[in-house]
Image 1 (spheres, rainbow, N blue to C red):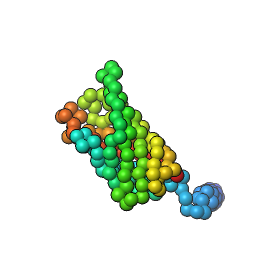
Image 2: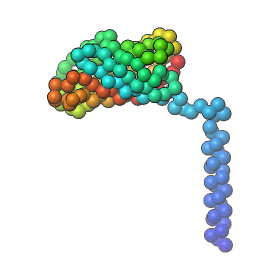
Image 3: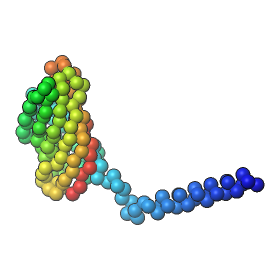
Image 4: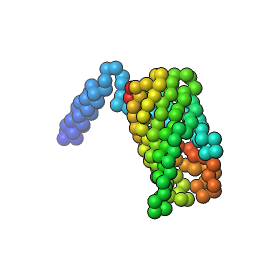
Length: 158
């Protein structure tokens, strides 16, 4: 009998927990991650431009990038990159400019940093947001890299 009482208490606890979880979901179906985005940017250093693919509700799915400005500083065998890039959406919905701040040590396989939206046009005129990035050099970090693939993740609004 004692075992049966424990089973009943556990069943009640599971039902109460499930009811609480379903009540916590907003009626609109929105989730806290509605503003979450991922971008995969491939850029050639020679051209100063590239392409991007994006996922998330707030951005266009693909487009091109162009380098607007770049400043590289070196201190104690650590390079810091400050870059502004414009993202031009293939669907014609607009553009947005992203500021990137990344650090890299020579021959490390990747750089790491942050990004933030600084301006936009069209559907992105009120866009704001920021996140993290990891950039992987190709063909390799010590092989006279000709480009970079940046994996960017973060949150946007607007």
